[in-house]
Length: 633
Image (cartoon, rainbow, N blue to C red):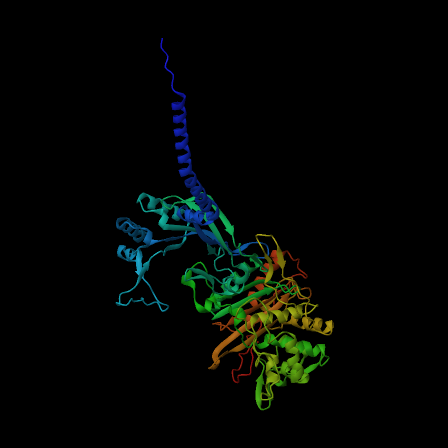
């Protein structure tokens, strides 16, 4: 067998050629690899954030939402104002490129809203004119309106969760891209008690697609109840459908704070029911009522008629929405009398048994007449209160003098706001000496030449009922942060001392008890088994710009029960009642009905056995109507 041998020189030459090629390829590719490495480093490391952000724009979306507005409760935690979950639905017409799908959407919206398809097609136009600050189209150099993309059309701001799901399914069935729609979870303000406390709570309106508090506590406490904003980031599919399982929220705000009032819902319901009965019976322009705890100043109930239902916009009327019990001031009439007489007792100007000559029912001062409803002769100070003598009260005020009279009335808070959280609370007319009105010293103590709000009168009677003095009225009990659980309580402030001698206050209370007993002007306010201290008042109604209205009166009763250990103070005032006008006739029975039911609700035991019914009294003489200065009882 013959063997062939490859020359050693030939093998060496082939290996060198391969090696040379490898070196050449390496020389060519190493710079390319280095360049790629540098590029990868630049893209993946140095500019990582930029390219990640660009990529996330394709599959990640961000929407902003808000937390829940703070809720409002009564003192026991019963919900008065809450939030109802809803869905705010809007779409971006520009993203619905297909004209056929846009037409289908217009038909769906037209059927749902009862509008025409043409109207919906106009709202769904992908382009719309650009508007200036005055709402006019912006024109280009050729006079043609400039157009911009239409990215927002609000379909409904408060869909129920069921309605929103039904619309979502219809959109899917018609092939309309869900990515053009925003189903935003939201909350709608809800008033579960309807008309209850509506004038105090107020309401929220939608202004330019935003919730704006319009009246009452909703407006005044918006700084506490307003929610913060929340940003939610989520991934979406190619068609824009949100992938909610990847959503996460970055909280930039939180739910609003919850407000707890001093109001007791059962007592509020009782007061409103009884006011409604009187309102239907006497058909006044308005009726006000308020109940307070004289020891703490807590407002337990606060109501007025006419009123409205914040859930029903058809009931909204300007006079029904206003918190008139705080905003309106009026000349109160005889319910003003205890204050000047009380301080005359306190400053030892008179004693309960001091005799006052009521001059047979008619008295002239500076040439002007003042009359009583009956022809009284000599009355004790206690009799002046029981019979509600204008002349006797005016003569006691003259004993005080104008300076001390005004100081006495100011001590009871007249002329100053109560400080309750009402945006337009009236301060009334402050009782001050007026050198140009020499009659004022005889008119102010009987409730003329001075004006007060019903809430000011309530506060002043708390000073008569409370041995410690005049409390600061409270409507807000506490504010709770639902996130942290922190509770901030409104302090019960130390009452302002009004009487220098407690014995004078007690003497005045005994006189006021006689007002509701046989022979007094407010027997219809008496509550069986409980002594009641109070005062009636009937005053002529003054209309700004027109003077005193003929035949129009305010009829009031203010009192507290049980008189010597008061649990509640109540004011009831009717504005221009029809068919009757005396406070002892129209307002005193409301006091009795409410007080009787509240004491039973509290299970307060009677202090004395029920008295036998009073024998029928002769019909009282009608008041003579001459002269603006007269007050009725």
